[in-house]
Length: 102
Image 1 (cartoon, rainbow, N blue to C red):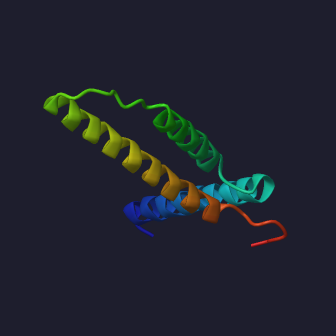
Image 2: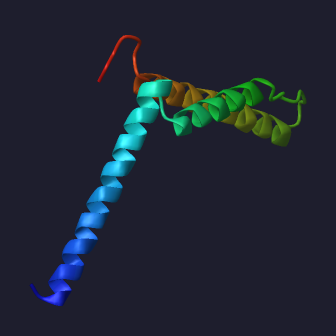
């Protein structure tokens, strides 16, 4: 076998071993905790974002510029809550269901 081919084959084998190790590690994490730790962190951040959006106060005024700012802030608040809700739904679907072994 040529030296370059041997190095290439060794690299491929090491990459396969690394990928398999990551897959097994992630699978064990999901099996033990019901989800990946990254998903849990993302869920916590998303819930915090929802809480912050709930606390956005819309200033009351009658000036036209202030009305435009008020509408923009309200729109941003609505979109933020909507996206956070969608993300929480997706994260819920990614969780391992109770009694499931897959």
